[in-house]
Length: 60
Image (tube, rainbow, N blue to C red; front, side):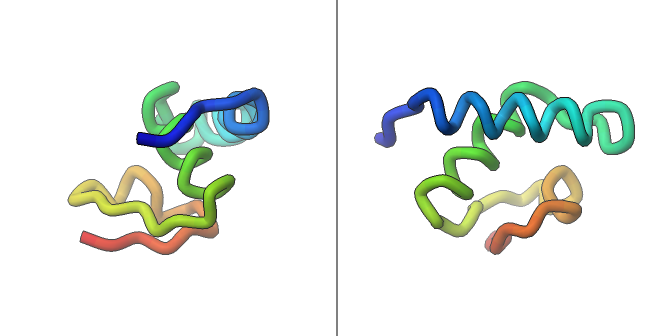
């Protein structure tokens, strides 16, 4: 388990503002992606289409 801190929430807000309309990003996806980005972790998912537009390593 990883802590969700203000840095993650700030990045989540930026991702939502940038990608909600164009890519349909949800708050849950934004928090997951932000957590991986802040902690420098790959994102393990079967829904690569939800994150393919981000600069993040995707693994399934």
